[in-house]
Length: 113
Image 1 (cartoon, rainbow, N blue to C red):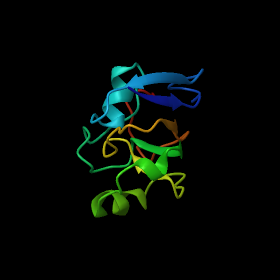
Image 2 (cartoon, rainbow, N blue to C red):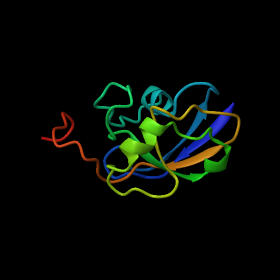
Image 3 (cartoon, helix red, strand yellow):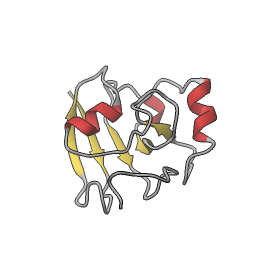
Image 4 (tube, rainbow, N blue to C red):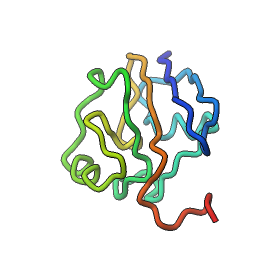
């Protein structure tokens, strides 16, 4: 199994997390299945940026993003060179360290009133 370390996020994962992940599954699905409620306003169809993450370690092991993902990332809050949309990242065999940015561009969130 692949290990994913999620860095602490004040609202979604205050203490951070260490997850055993199944290769071949999306990073977004893996986070959701492990109790980390990352936003995914477009239902994981690569049509928004609410599931944006920054891959702090293991980025080079990931398949490159498609053109649509790259275009969407240009609109993400806190964009960094190792930013990805978690709905488009397929977990591989290399361990990852990911950070969920503090903000998204989602103006309407059911989690925040």
